[in-house]
Length: 333
Image (cartoon, rainbow, N blue to C red; front, side, top):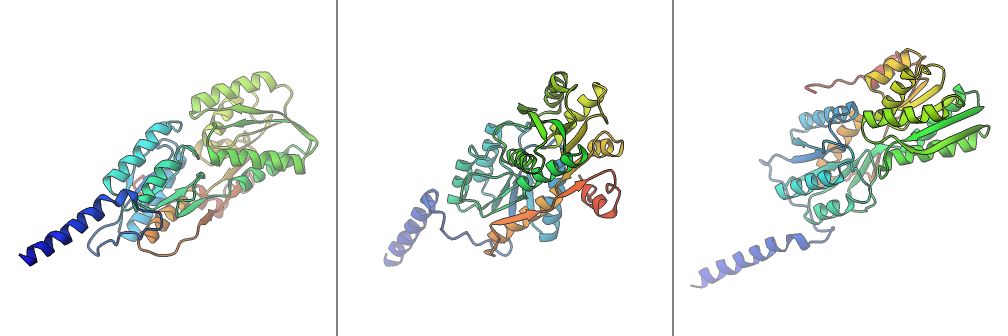
């Protein structure tokens, strides 16, 4: 009878501990992964359609193969669907993945789901775009403000430091592109005071079609008076490129964009784009997964891991270094 009582007591303690898991604080120890248990990391991008995210996926897949883990790649269909991304995060929490790598669509809206994950002992690594939270284990991303500054320097140089220009923003709530936009504005004001920015408050939206429509509207209004344009991401740059082509202004207005899809690089080679600020999305996916696995394995990680930036020009686009950046090995993608 004493043995039975002891077993029931132990069982009761274990049950109570398990039921109280949701209430654990953020400094609670991470669960120990058994030697025979394969680590599963959910990688949740802002979307899955753009070439940028496919390259992030390739980098994550490289880490998966290298580390012998399992990634679950899943994201919202549209890059403005905050609710769907929140639902994905919550679903991964319910599934009990060992860690989450997240590119938040909204720096505020995704803070609560991340907090929930961490309180349930699921570490979160943020990639690409910042989050207003202290719960993430690490932040792996481009220095986006510096990227905006590089874009401004390139545009100011090709404009000869004079004239009028416009900036087409991406989408409200996106921390990464907001930082690029702010970096661009700061650098233009500091280094090119003779360039007048006649419009900086219009948004492209999250699709290439919405970006095309917004770009055409801006060119219809300002196209005859401006000498320069800046856009802060791949979809806004693509929409602006097509608008410049459709209006007969491609190559006549200096254009600097952000990101380096095949279509944009082709535009650079054709003289329709004068500069592209390129990130390293492959390294972002790779480093994000590596950091998450290190946290699960109780290894130290840096709170901020920066990935590289480069400015593509018609002169350097075909150099070996730039080719390796914009055409990484995308095995199985």
